[in-house]
Length: 132
Image 1 (cartoon, rainbow, N blue to C red):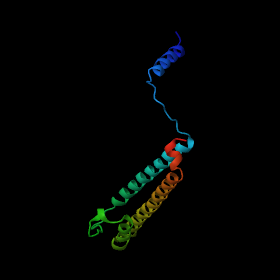
Image 2 (cartoon, rainbow, N blue to C red):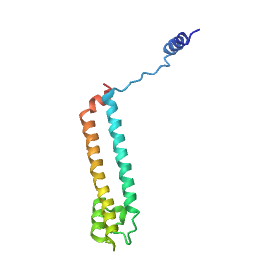
Image 3 (cartoon, rainbow, N blue to C red):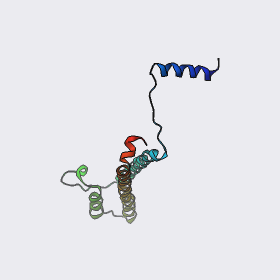
Image 4 (cartoon, rainbow, N blue to C red):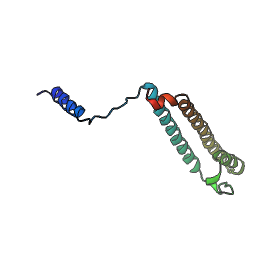
């Protein structure tokens, strides 16, 4: 007996027994949102790696807010680092500034992607739910 015939027989039995579940295959437009979300996740990972490179520079003491470094807005923290942290050697100063300039655009990139996700969802809310 051929596999196709066996598969057809099995599908017919499952259909009669109501064991089949309807599925919806997303089209390319619906696949666009997960791509956008993956881009945001990649941007968040890039931002974290850039922050870790910046934090590896030995800065003592690190600027903190009254709430501690965790409670401070990243941009305010970077501004404080620029104002308060200075090195004896220009090469160290340049390295710190280079790492800070790498971190700054990451937040803008993430904000743009989040805005795009919200805009995509608000425009397609009805079609997204209905699957069409």
